[in-house]
Image (cartoon, rainbow, N blue to C red):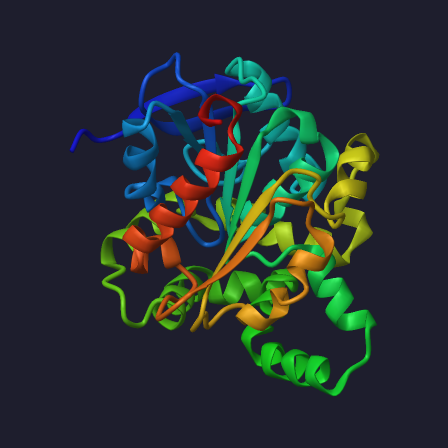
Length: 304
């Protein structure tokens, strides 16, 4: 199987590096990685979409090498949403484009679909419950909801760690190794961990990735320049959305997204993948790819 090409994408706010598969003239498929991760985790899905005619582009998100730290120093969700929209424009994407995100990439994809739904025909979220579904869980008191929140709390410890700069500095690379070991215990993650460490090679890059989380809680890490995009970050997608979650995800419980179909637009689907964990596109690549290809076939204009 042919490996990915490297691609340089100049944007107004930074220059993005990416991996790419498939023909340059095909409909655009943007694949967004999560934390602590890299585009190399799309090595199964990327070639499959390319074989079906898509121009697949998997960018290194701002803060991750070789894209590197953002010149404007912003890592809020709104800045990442703006980056994706700018990439779509820079690559000449049209309404056939699809957007797929895992973990943080899923949160970004959801925000793009809420802010600029005309750009994409389909959105796929992997291990990333729609934020509005989580908000619904937290704001509709029910004994079962409280149980889910209580079970999730110990899984979210790392978000608290990276939100404290001194503590994040102390754990550094060890945290990345720990998360991969805990989140992918049954998957040979040696190569994926190595790729993640290359993408976050030093304190500067790691602090950039950690600031994604800090910007969620601390308004000091949010810039007015991205206010419109930021306001969409936690709103429901306005594009038909496939939400996939591993049944045994050790990072985010699948139950967090149980209310997804009550807030997602018509034509959306929610699928819990049996025996899959947080990195379901690596642990169950065939099942994950099949679900995505089927969904895109029914939503992408050229496929109807």
